Length: 453
Image (cartoon, rainbow, N blue to C red):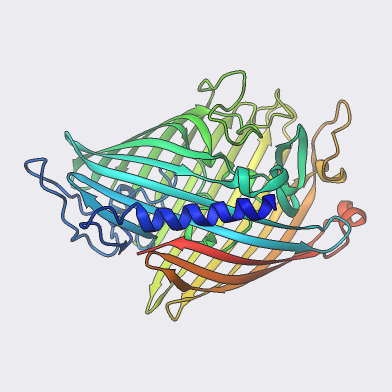
C-alpha cells in the first residue's frame, strides 16, 4: 500500500506540474526545446517574444540554454522536450521525467521490486544588467518512491543505506537535486563568461549525468559506472567559473566533496558541515553542432561516508554525438571514468557506451554497454555490515549489456507516457562467480512519463 501511494504521488505531481504550472498564463504556449536567442526587452517591461530558433548552432548557444544539470553541455543539436513560456521579462521553462518500474533479476543475488525514479526541473531566465540570469531548481520524490533507500541493481555499489554499504542496489536521489543561479556575460561575439553558484548543484566534472543526458533518457536504471563517471551531479556549496571561446570552454569549480547522506530529504550534506574542500576543472570542445567532448579531473575530499579518511582523484573523458533525423533523432555517448584512492593508490576504471535512436516520431530503441570496475565490497551480501578494519580494493570488471524499447502515447495535453521494457545480461569476473553466477540477467518493465510541449 505504501509503495502504491508513493508511486501515485510521483505520477500526480508530474502530471499536475505539467497541466497547471504553465496553464496559468495565456501567453505560455508549449514548445520543443527553449533554444537560446538572447531575448531582450529595451524597456524591461515588454514580455519576451517566442521566436527562438528550433535548435542551437554553437557551443555558446547550447551553454546559454542551461538545459542540463550544472554547467554540463551536450551537443548543440540536442533537443530536450519541455514546456516554455514567458511572463513579463522572464522566460520560464519546465521539464521532468518519471519512470514507474518493476525489475526482476536472476541468480543468487537477484531480487525484484516496484519503484519510481523521477525528477522535475523548473527554470526562469531574464536579462539583468550586462548579462543573463538563470534561476534553476531540480527536485525528486525518489526518497518516497524508492523504499528501503535503494532499488535492486546487480553489481552496483556506492553510498549507504541504514549505515551499511549499498551492495547490488542504487540509492535514490535527494529531494533537492539542484538549487542554483547562473549568470552569463557576453565578452564578445564568440566569447562568454559564466558564473554558477549552487548550495546544491553540479560541479564541473564529468559528462552530463545519466538522469539528464539524452542517450540515457529512456533507460530507467542507473549506469554501473555512476560513481566513477558522474556521481558528483549532486554536490554541496558549488561555485563554478567558466570561459567559452568559439568551440572551447574551460571551467573550474570548488565544492564540498562528500556524497549526500542517506537522509535524502535533507538539505545538508553531513552533520559536520559542508565547507568547500574539493575542486575540479573541465575542458569542453564542441567543433560542430552534433559533437561535444570533455575531459575533467577532480580532487574529492572524503566522498564516501564509510571511508572518511580516503580522498579520491577522479578523471573522466567523454564524447557525445547527436544527429537529428527525419521524425527522429540519434544520440550517442562514450564515457571513461576513473577513481584513484589517494590513501593506497588503488584505481577503478569504468567504461560506458550508450546509443538511443528515436524513429517514426514516437518510437525509441537503445543500448547501454558497460565495463565497470568493482571492489571487494561485492563479496558481502546486501545489508551486511563491513568487518572491522576492512580495506576496500579492486576485485575485477563487470560487463553489462542492456537493450530496450518504448513508445510514446499522449495521455494529457502536456504529458507523454511510454510503456517499455529493458533486458540486461552480465558477465561476471572470476572472483565473483560463486556469489553471482557466470551470466546473471535482469529485466525491467516500466512506464515512462514526460512533460512535453
